Amino acid sequence: MKKALCLAGVIVLVCWNAAFAEAVKVIMDYYPPFSYEEKGEIRGISTQVVRAVLKEAGIEVPIKQYPFARAYQMTQKESSVFEYCVVRTPEREKLFQWIGVVAVAEHGLLALKDRDIRIDKLEDLSKYTVGTVLEDVVDQYLRKHEQQLGLKLDRVADYELNVNKLFSKRFDLCGMNKLVGMYLSKKLGHSENDIKPVYIIEELSGYYYLVTGLKTPPETVKKLQRAFETVHKNGTYQKIIDEYFSK
Image 1 (cartoon, rainbow, N blue to C red):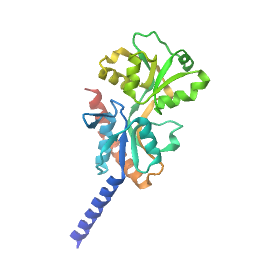
Image 2 (image 1 turned 60 degrees about the vertical axis):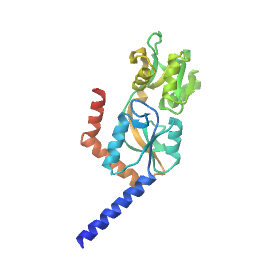
Image 3 (image 1 turned 180 degrees about the vertical axis):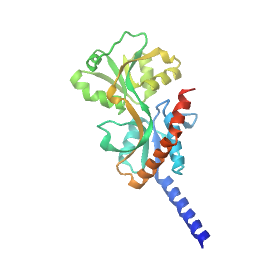
Image 4 (image 1 turned 90 degrees about the horizontal axis):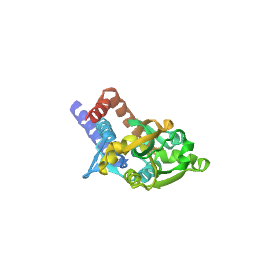
């Protein structure tokens, strides 16, 4: 009798996890070194963290890459879509359910090292053209001040194009995470030292999160939040961060 009950419990659990896996989508955008697709494989620091969380939760789902603006809208509009890496800001707070931290975020403005550009305050940006990625946190932040400060923004679809246009001198500055800029600089055949941060936006310094929209059921959210707590407490998260940056 006990064996039968145990077997029934296992079957229910397996079926529940299968149904859960079918319903859940995990998505990201091209944001190296945190999340990116290379040779058909989804990689990155935050990808490793998310995979550890999914494993802890007993969930096997593929991770898919989309342009950031599309991923950002999908997550808000659909149920059970989980996206990373999303910066937590006051404007975004009520748009998502915040699941857990996947990396540290530090955003600012980057320039070519041979440009004599100094930015002490946002008002100084009015002299330059700034490249941003559609709906990225820097893009959202600068658009709030665009008219007031007379900013000239060149909004593009992805981060690699943003850095490429910086090196092509299509604009003077690009806004993004400095580690992303350094990574893409090397990928495009330059040195990571060919670009330099000239202004850090303190309001955008914090963490990247795995998030989901408001339509996602609470039980799904709680399941992944519990898994996140375990991954952070048992040292798995810190091990991933330490291993990556010690390379």
